[in-house]
Every structure is written in structure tokens, then in C-alpha cells.
Image (tube, rainbow, N blue to C red):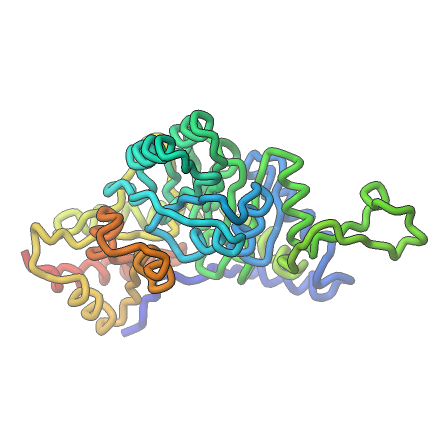
Length: 387
């Protein structure tokens, strides 16, 4: 019986043709396809500026720097995320703390955020930046977070790594509310460039900083040089930047994928709807739906409802893997990792995130998954979940 991965890239013939065309062109690294991809991504996401980066972690790093994160500053994020959502602040020398999640959406809880902000204000230690995470592709409560940001004076860096193509209050994620939004184009994401990412911003000054920081802090434009150039070869380094650039090959793949984002998202939505129907009678807690937003459905994450079954997550996980089903778990709460434990965090600090993790399973979901494959996943789950 064939193995069903938890996710996989969707590469079409036109994607291959786009990459081959790039390979046969004059540019394989820094060329016109990067600019074209950025422009089309910005148009699709209704945002003024889109800046390609080598990966989403790099995007989060330079976004923190562009927002002014550094030593002595405090950044809050969700414990239910990949390591990069917190690490990006640590790269800048900032302190990190976490805000517990809403048990239904698995995103940062706005109630917990407000409560923590009130305490932080009384202690005169408010965050400089908050990094909400659109877990599994479901957008956070960004309107409420923007209101809190305006009230308490922090910046919003949205980790939209799971949410390319998602929408919130009728607009694409990345177009409003956050100061900067960062997307991932890793192989198993909604749109892939094999590895890569994008940072979006409405503010041209932030976009300029992002472009500067992704490329060694270096400028070549004669209008930006601080000294009269001797010739066209002259460049200047204005800040300490990084080599976080995307290649033209990757941009060619990304732009080709972007043309099909609507089709691929509809396939993901259809697969999620099918899971909802197939799993309705099982002792599982299914992903939340919200009428004011559309998930990108990067993941279909369920929880084993331990009030209705004696089966443990470890038992179900192992059983599915034995059956050739590539189930996964997203995520081990960041604050429980040894690195963050050494900073003083402990199990029990963020109980909603820990409770979610203890029961979580990510089921196979990707555009090409077939109804038969999903029925097989549901049948194996039913066999492993006695009530």
C-alpha cells in the first residue's frame, strides 16, 4: 500500500518550463524575475511592497531589525509555532516572551494578549513588537491586535508562513493590520520556491530597510550613494546586512506557482471540507472555522478528544505511521525547548498551548490528495480511536 505523506509540493509542467526558461536566460541569481515575482505577489495580496528573501526565517530576522528590535527590547509571540517565530528576536539580541493561544483557533489569544499587556504596562515593561502566527493557515484576530497595538504602542510582525492566499475580513493576509507580514515558500507550503520567503509592508521606509538588510546593507543606486561615485561599479555599505536574497530560478518557480494559487487553495479547501465530513463522528477536535476569514489550509490539525477515547496521541501516531500514513505533529511549544527553558521558561507557563500539543496530530493535506486517500486516513483513525 502506497505511503501518504503529510504534505508534498505541487509541481506542474508550467512550473518546470518557467524554471528551464530561467536557466536558459542571462540570469539565474539576481535578475528580472525577482522583481516580477515581487510585483505580482504585491498585487495579489493588495499590498504596496513585497520583498523576496531566501527563506521565511531570514524574512522574520530582517523584519525584526527593520522594526527596530534589538538589545533591551521585548518581543512576544505564540508558543504554538515553529522555532523561528521566537528565534528571530533572539538573533537581534532582544528578550522573548509568549502569549498563550486560543484553544479553538490555536492562534494567539487576544484575551490573553490584552491581559498580559495590562500587567506589562503596570510593570513598565511593554513589548516592542508582537509576532502573531497564522497557525495552519488560519489568520489571527488581526483587527483586534491592531487596536491593541495602537493602544499600547507596539509593532506587529505577522508570521504568515502558513497563510499565503488566506483572507481576513475580505482582504488578503498581508495587506492590512500588520506592520510587516512574512510568508514562507518552503517545499510543503501553499506556494513553493523550493526554499524562500516574502516580506510585505505598506510603508515604503520599511520596505527599503528590508531590501537593504537582505543584501549586505549595500546600495548601488547613484541617488542613494553618500559620496560622488567614480564610476558605475561603485557601491556602498550603509548598514550591517545579510545575504538573504532569493535567486531568479526560485522567483521563476514562485511566479508560476502564484498563477495557480486560487486553484491550489480551492483543492486544499475541498480536502479540508472532506475531512470535516469523514471525521465528524470520531473522538477528535477538528480545526476551527470562522465566518470572517478563509484559511489557507496549510495544515489540517486535529486533537484527540481524551474525554471520548482512551487512545493516546502516541498510540494513534504510531498506528498511522505503521499504516503508511505520514501523520505529523505541529508544534512542540517553543517555550518548552531546552534553549528557552535555559532562559527561565517552564512547562505549565502556557497551558492552552501545552494542552493542544499533548493531543495534536496533523493529517495529510496537499492539493493532490485524493478522496480515496482521505477515506483511508479516516478508516485508519476510526480503527485506532475506540470510544
